[in-house]
Amino acid sequence: MLQFERWKVVLVLFLTVMGILYAAPDVAPPKTQAWLAKNMPGWLPSGTINLGLDLQGGSHLLLQADINSVVKDRVASMEDAARNRLRHDSIGYVDLAAKADGITFKLRHPAADHAAAYKIASNLEDRAAVDISSSGVVSVTLGEDALKALNAQVIQQSIEIVRRRIDETGTKEPVIEQQGENRIVVELPGVADPEHVKQLLGKTAKMSFHLVDMNATDGQPLPGDVRMPMQNDPGQSVVIREHAVLTGDMLVDSQPTFEQGEPVVSFRFNSIGATRFCDVTRDNTGKPFAIVLDDKVISAPRINEPICGGSGIITGGFTVKQAQDLSLLLRSGALPAPLKVIEERSVGPSLGSDSVAAGKVAASVAMGAVLVLMTCSYGLFGIFADIALILNMVFIFALLSMLQATLTLPGIAGIILTIGIAVDANVLVYERIREELRAGRSVLAAVDAGYVHAKATIIDSNITTLTVAVILFSFGTGPVKGFAVSMSIGIITSLFAALMLTRLMIVTWLRKARPTKIDI
Image 1 (spheres, one colour):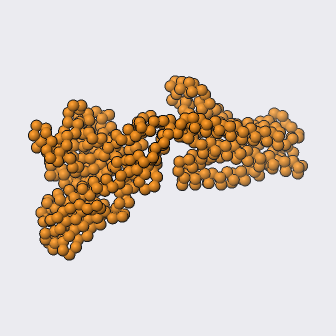
Image 2 (tube, rainbow, N blue to C red):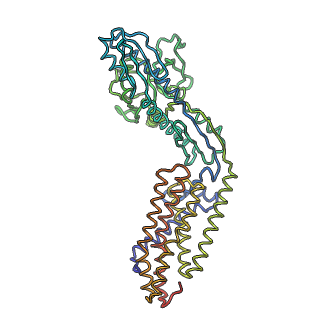
């Protein structure tokens, strides 16, 4: 154990230097940090640790998705699709109506049209329950499983869209996660104006697909029409049918691509959307088809032919950048349900500053106490452990900076906890060395035996603690994850500091001093 290969020495020194370089921006003054961020080459460290909401202040919003509006729109879409399919297949029906969780209609010829009607009803909505009575009354209902699946889909898509919109503001590391069944928590460190955030979120509207009304006289909307402005052509507008024939939540993918050397946007629907898209394009070939987002028409391509494969392309003389942007909007730009702010609060920077100051005091007291205790207990070897402990803190901040992790108050607690954990390994080694010296072994033999016999215990104890941290990260949320991340990083760096860094210092000193007796 006292033999240190040259490559190990080089590795330890290299990692130590890199750790210092990566941690340096975190302790630099704000002006120096800004200069480093602008002027340092890309391969050199310039990033700093991002402070969480509780450390630098910011905004906290709790949003609630209006799932009922999604269900209402989905039922309306089912009603429209059922009417179109029944007419297309020449199936007689009466009393087609929407209810809270589905639709009903009555067949004119129950015996003859039972099978065809069941097939049509089954394809109206995934997971929908279909029932046809003996009198020919067809009921298509969104049951509990279908509503749960729809709720999960809406929340996950809303989280993705909110994250994309918030990231466009330049906010670093926002916390956007689900709470309960239909709520979303948004935390924005450094953003002290919730009204501004609410305005940004209010811009996310539901994306939908509409037919353009070619019968509008002189561009004047007819009953059931609405005029929408063109997003990329200021001053121009399009008259479209108010009722959407497809909604954006039926899209499963959209990508920029090329056709005949021109940038276009490809898209793909789920099974229900594919069926409806086929019906719409077949019945409206040659007519324009408007894609609406944020109450603006982002594209109105012409339907050249029926598209029944569930996918298609949008052409429109796009540049590569426009095709990329449009595909992004189609893929993740649709907010499937209105979001209502039910709770908002601001965390002032003064409270964050107090938390940072308290964390610094706690860390300084803990560090100072450990340094003094190790020096008093183990003398020169304690000083070696103190140096390794200081460098261990450097490694922790270096890794947090490299990962661009967000540091929260629980994260500071995790770092403080690792200060104590970091010297455990050294204590185990040093106590074993004492036992070997009492047994009459020489200095070199005692040091070697100390590391050999303590190594397994050190690794075992740290892996046990690391396992707990991984479990906390896997099942925890928010601050719990922050605590788990900082503690995990501290465990890994403390292992390196104890088994490599401290041992290198001790071995180097033994080779140069060649002591016959040590006071430990």
